[in-house]
Image (cartoon, rainbow, N blue to C red; front, side):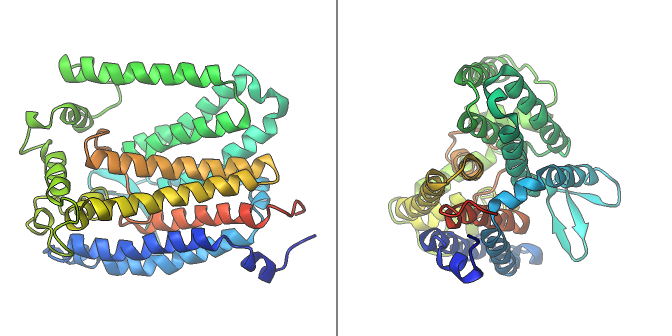
Length: 383
């Protein structure tokens, strides 16, 4: 039996909706605090831009919530192709343009969008469709190898921009989807072991011996070194992480108060990144441990509600989609907060629903809409 629009609307997980909107609305206040003293008008008006993007994100949320998630699987190859086209177009002169040293934006009318963000959502849908299509062959090594090959296509295009942060999201998302789909764990474990060896090489090879990694630019190698020892260049490449640690540490238990974060106001936190990549540093300084814990708690509750939707799904497609969304959001949360407190290297990745960024906000809200669709249709298996 097909559900009416009203029935779908009433079935929405309103707790998840409230958590999402609480984070999105709080982001406006956080972004304003991070930019209100900036001498550049574009940055000062960032909070207004975020306000304009929230209703667009809400439209995406309700659009994907009301449409049965299995509908998108029928168009997965087309969505994947469109996403790849966007990643290719950013490299075309006159269409893609440079910003902050990366060619990852394109103009569409009055809007500027990041195809890499759209590709994350399209990739979740495409990989879900692909893994479901493998059927009983999903446990074979060929499935694991083919997924890795498929993943390297968007990752390679994104690294070419270069945007290491966005590219890094695809690997954990792929691993979670493969694990849930039934790919043998030993294949995943061996790859994770290889990843551990890469981490060891980054310490003993890049940091200790000064070796280089093919494909990584000099500033990316410098970020790895600064991760292990920011004092190597405290006024240069180690500046960001040092000032982030000072900001969060000086916030103490309850913070210095809204709009009173001296590290931010005086410009010690880089003004080009304090409202997106390092927004958690602003929160930690002004709201302290309590405020930072509330943000982490809300983000964690959102992930748990996504997990609940996946557990309630009546088919594997719904479970895979929700787990893919959860993996993507978790990676962003872990890396963004982790790089602010020197747990992971600085990679330039936004905090979901909190950092400034129109395309990313709309994609995140649309992804939650996909999760809502799984929750709404959990008792209805017909298209």
